[in-house]
Length: 173
Image (spheres, rainbow, N blue to C red):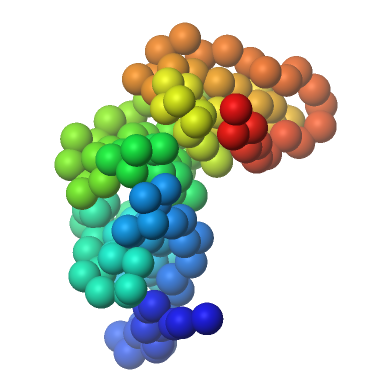
């Protein structure tokens, strides 16, 4: 086990910097992760990418604001060229939506608009043509699994239940 990031104390706010939710790219060359470093508030989380040896750590989401913005759960496309994630950056109520971007942080695109509800935990299909995610289906209510095309079109519910279906993964075939 090798330590690839440095966590420490943010001396301005006296809060611990967190680095977590690492995701290794399918080609094994890079790791995406979220961190609270370089931010004005401990609650703000950005997505970073680094080489798999821990070098060249670069922030790829840029949400310079005083609001509590978080970007979470980065997931690589099978060809390692894109990252899908969820964020509250465009919502006034702090609710989460699904976004996709190139692996260098360019071409960021919002894929969902859940109209006051929340979308979480996106994951690419092995063919990179679909994304599965969790959607809160009513205010304060259950979360169900949904699927959409990788461009955000053709959204459809996979489960309809009063239970919490928060995460899913694809079979390799």
